[in-house]
Image 1 (cartoon, rainbow, N blue to C red):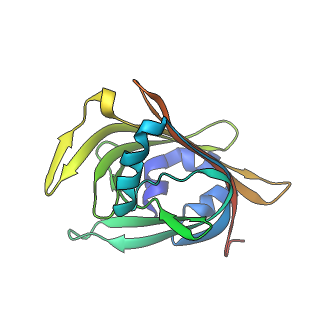
Image 2: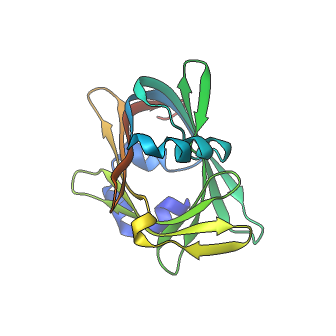
Length: 200
């Protein structure tokens, strides 16, 4: 059983059948981000620094090709984990937004470690709405320094909201992501569509 099926529990049955298969790893897909938008221009150095950690990037635009690869792996304590590799292709540049996720069964959350090496940590809450869409929202966040996880004040956090759905008419997955900060507002957003390499 995947960590996503575990965290959703009975809600999993309400998830669109294609999304059920999408969250049974391994999973690979390719698609197009119709829009990628950044926040205030003064955040550019922060996003540029994120390139080194494969977590953020300063580029934005329209109709950006991208790929997703979700790969199951095993942690040092034997727990199931999923590595996320997201690559965005900006002309002659490849930009990454990578993460390692694992299940916190006690809190019924997904623990999302962002960056390579890990730079941020965020709790993720999963929910299925009445339309069979998957909604993901970030909760508690921490900054990772060596082996320390330092709680971040809410005013410094980037709270993510993700919606994934499936368009039966076009046979395609849809995704919409927005990351916002309570002080500066929108940090970045992207919206696009993708098709799985192999899914029935």
